[in-house]
Image 1 (cartoon, rainbow, N blue to C red):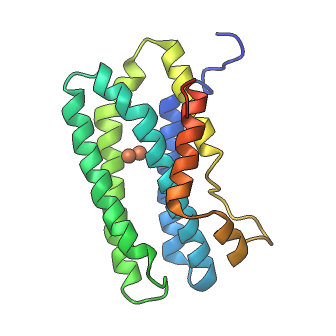
Image 2: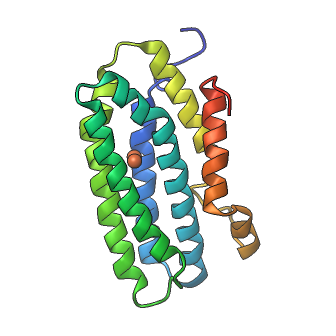
Length: 189
Ligand SMILES: [Fe+2]
Ligand SMILES: [Fe+2]
């Protein structure tokens, strides 16, 4: 496949790296405070929105169609995602220096990381075994299009409240991600 290197086309490596980025952002939110914690938490929420939206568009449909028992596997993952979103929305309205914030964050972290492990075990392993290089490459392209929507690292000197506001409401982030992914997959937005 001209122009596409093995690592560019490795959708599973991209997904695993995003799981690692999510874990690192949880660490960062936990070890910081005040404005720094607020900013790290915004990036975490933003990355979770982008990552889960991309999985809903790219990974779960593949599993449903191509993995034995795929329907049940995806339904279980979606139930986990819904539960995590509920915990997240409770945290999202909270002051990160509130004493209840860190226990809530820990609950979210446990849910999100258990969900990520289940995906790696029941979905990603099957994707990697797939022999369809064209499909793997198109999924990787879609993942990269989604990732362009998520700033995972702080931008020194510009990490202001204004910049974080500019990330926009989460529903809008998910809409933009969905459009970018569908466009990259060659479907209408
Ligand atoms: Fe997920
Ligand atoms: Fe995931």
